[in-house]
Length: 476
Image 1: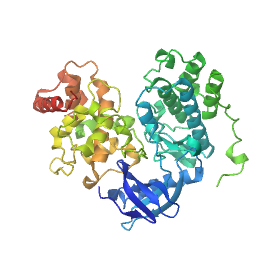
Image 2: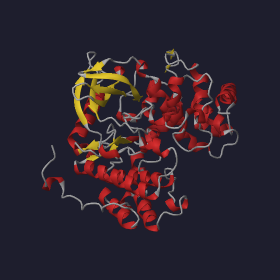
Image 3: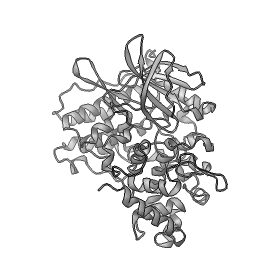
Image 4: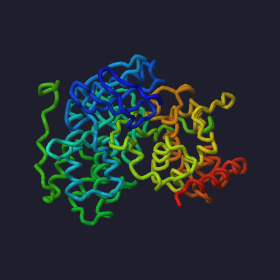
């Protein structure tokens, strides 16, 4: 990725992180002598009107909210090559995902953090916006005057607002944090989808882990958590949205009243409705696609864009030392390691690991991001077919089918994790090495692996290569 020198008046210094559709750069505002984050649409998407519109819409929503609890947008423009960009707050303390890499927060800190996130979501809801992708990597941390810190919600790439809430809704969200209705075509998620996301975030803050399905009380992992907090969180995580808290405000009040140990002011009463107040300025083969239908999109996970901060310039997936996941000194290219860790830890599934993803990429393409095999209609480092990748790219069917030139590592590697997390659930009773069963599923389909009782004969040479490479890539 070539580093642009400037975006308007802002000097660009280094890459902070990238996703399938955009990259975020650390910039400097010379007039105000201040660091900023600059989000730039990927060059392959410049002339896709629908993608440009979603990109600009995200900036408009953040600007409309204009809250210190959300990433703030200060400027917008176009580079000389016509790529749109917008300038926003720089999260110099990184992401909540980075902070949680060390385990759960102390009870008081966890509840205060949850409270701030809830207040930010309330502000979005007051504007008629449903975020739809609340997760630790979309909560940023910024230094505040006097030595404190500010919590900011980021990434409205798949948010919905206004009349869009009543129009056809395609699946979108992130595994572990998205409400069950978000996995349905036309699930029409409303504010209660964000209540579920807030419940999942709070569970992670308190326990160091996102909730499993079905959700267990947080106190099952951290016994010091009061019963009232358990009840509040479990109600937020109700699969039936009719049984959840009706709003972020209700959930926030329940958390605050559940314990007297939190040293903070109570949540304010909900504001009147907006109308009553002043408005604020394998690689899956085609056979897999045919068998999946609309249900394939259930785990299209991940927002349309990532907004990343952090002093080390890494993405949220690189928050833990990469050597924990991939052997140091192996031939896994350094520039892809963060993406591989993200894909290999996308969900909690037997056999899934960054070492498996790296081994599959080695077997598929030898880590060649420019691979093109038109005869098989397969492209890029993970050999995706465009008409299949459209289901597993960030935002899934909410975004257009990528052209071969659009299939970058930033787009295709995370999609491997989403694909395996979805189809891997079919393999729980299949004998054999779960990692190799996943690899064979990527090459063929989960149906073929289930029918064969393990890796089908045709794909055993591929599985054996993956196994050899995994031995090279697993940490010692």
